[in-house]
Image (cartoon, helix red, strand yellow):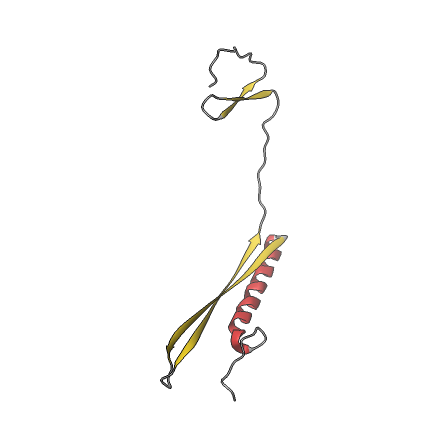
Amino acid sequence: MSKIKPINLESDTFALLKQDMTNELNRMLRNMQRYKAEEATLTVKVKVSIVDQELDNGEQGDVPTFEHKVSTSVQIKQESSGKLSGNYVLEEDGKGGFVIRPLSEQMDMLEEPV
């Protein structure tokens, strides 16, 4: 049996990554059902490092390390809403901001905004 492993997603080189993806996908789908979520995201990150080091046979060689992280995010939408509208006028406050003033109040041209 050869110890040489191809580097592709079909080989067993990334068997643990594929298993983690399957586990997280199943967990994500269960959570979507449980919380009636309409949308979710599965994210896979693979970090590859190569270190030049001395091998067992005394030669130098590139030794790779493959790390992975699989995460999910289930979008559960919760919101509150409200509205402020009506008889207000928007004015600059003279300090770089804004204020709203009821339309029924007449503002003297010389009055300083609050």
